[in-house]
Length: 262
Image (cartoon, rainbow, N blue to C red; front, top):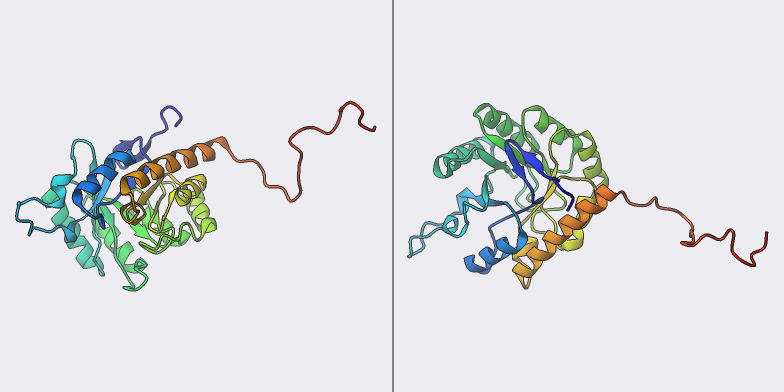
């Protein structure tokens, strides 16, 4: 990466542009290995899905190094603004952090977010002092409204959660980034390294993923691949790709060649 290519989420300055999750791993030890390989500095934790039934007394949080990773709690599983606000408040009490990934699901089949409830919850959480990162559809208008109520970033989906379909609407993501004054983090639907690179080449600030790593045959290896893809996609964006052309254009000049006809 280029020197000093950091970005900020609220008051946090991050070097890694990859954010990873904590769900769906075959074991917590595998999760730890993947986190280490990812180079990420932030991990998401679904507060409503932390099991307290482990006979050892440990929870998922015991497998996340708080000295290395910032915890981004999320409101996964919530379907109303009221539930999301309450979950965020409980997360703040438990983990002593104002960082919250706001997720309010509107459709149980597609897991698409409910925009109206998400905006309502975001407005209340911002008033309550939270640093809010909302999961939202790839809708430029919805993203702008969330920015206007005080969210520190917007997180449009690339594709439905856990689908691995990649960036389905790159044009929409580009418009969101063009209009945003806060970081844009592509969230959900990234299935493999090329998807992550494509997202970053659109100019977004970061990519958040979980299933694409956790469901791979080798999660740690995939985490490393995602790390490199995010870095290469960012570099390609900064470098500026060549203009696309309809017809061939020779790499070597055709004028001035010895024996060439004038």
